[in-house]
Length: 240
Image 1: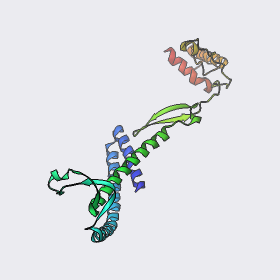
Image 2 (image 1 turned 90 degrees about the horizontal axis):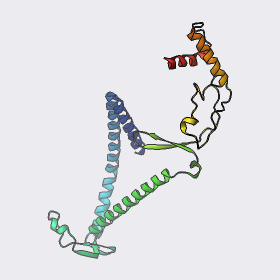
Image 3 (image 1 turned 90 degrees about the vertical axis):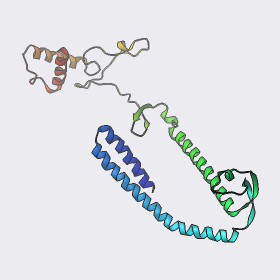
Image 4 (image 1 turned 180 degrees about the horizontal axis):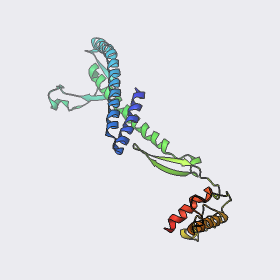
């Protein structure tokens, strides 16, 4: 049963994504699959009821036959009614509490109270479980985090930042970059030279040399070396 429930949740997420993308046919096919799974779940629950209901009725009839006309003292006070009638709502209101009760009355109220208590415990456990899942591990407090939105919820991913230094895309030489200082503004920290943070000084000079030859029509763009051609094309686009 849990496998079917998890499968329905997955299909429901896919249906929402299909509607967002405008794929109505795919969404309708997924909904048909979901209805088929729900039908299987209903069949399984009906089979359980077919086997359990006769046993319950026989056990209930046996207990009522043995203890139906008897009264006993309950371990907890139960509501007391003055002539309960199903079709008269006035008689539904209790007139007090009593510990002396019959079998049917005790069964109904014990079952009702136990259901409420178990439901409250389940909700408290689910809330506490969510808190445990959302708690940040002590090892993750120093890690970088990123929020990722999904159709069902927003998850937070943790990862360790890379401290590797940038290197030139052509020569592989380590780039020195700008000196970090809190007194400098963001524009002062950001490299303003063309291809700053991507190419080294020598590689950048070679790119501009090739660019000058292409502009002067000494070379065509196809004659430029493959490793410089991409940056020459970018420089031409920027000039335009």
